[in-house]
Amino acid sequence: MTAATNRVSLLGIPFDDNSSFEKGPAKAPKVVRDLLSSGSLNKSTELGIDLANNVAWQDAGNIDLVPGEFLEPIRKECDRLLADNHRLLSLGGDHSVTYPILLAYAKVFPSLTILHIDAHPDLYNEFKGNPLANACPFARIMENNLCGRLVQVGIRTLNTHQRQQAEKFSVEMIQMKDFYNSPLPPIKGPVYLSLDIDGIDPAFAPGVSHREPGGLTTRDVINLIHNIDGPLVGADIVEFNPDKDIDGMTAQLVGKLVKEVAGKMLMDLHQT
Ligand code: MN
Ligand code: MN
Figure 1 (cartoon, rainbow, N blue to C red):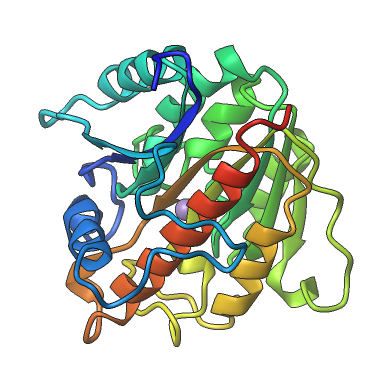
Figure 2 (cartoon, rainbow, N blue to C red; figure 1 turned 180 degrees about the horizontal axis):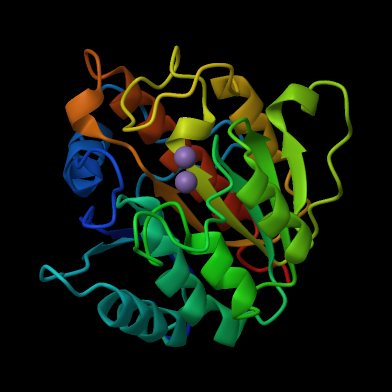
């Protein structure tokens, strides 16, 4: 394979300094990699992509992070990999990591549609005095014009401040209460998926720091991924907290989602 060949790479981000409630998402990359190599699931995706022996599917390892620094290290590593024609599936971290990832992505893909699946809009101007908390990344992304559109799905924690922020930034929000009876706006490419595991109902995904009942089913989320109207050029899967998991249920779910997101990204690799 030449350096110029496009590939999809798994990038671990073991980071949870900006978790506003409980730490733990820093442990996600190791737990999910262990699950994926455990033999408990095969390497074929529902869309018919085989991840085994697939030269376009690689593991870029973890980003090395020291406490107190995350913006520049994450942005720089994403810059480097994107310049080397990787498309990134980032795994792990609290949701604050999406802002530096998008700082890198916006330079390569200047008018992305972001599909953001989450119980929370993460639009706080600041949270407990921290403007980079895991409750704030989409305020920073919108202020800095890092995407063309932000479409949020699964939201069920809207308050007055975040409603005002959503209006200010023209966010297209499909609240969970409306999800089953209102059509989704078209999600046209290039698309970036930011998948907060707490968007899924805690009955399916107990391993999160903020369990918010009344959420999406696993199947809802897999269908959302499959139905993205291409090309899916980047993704992150955040907020899985192995310390809150029950009998590995959420690890198994996240492993499945890594496969399905990777399969969709690989299908779309040569689509512009
Ligand atoms: Mn979030
Ligand atoms: Mn959330």
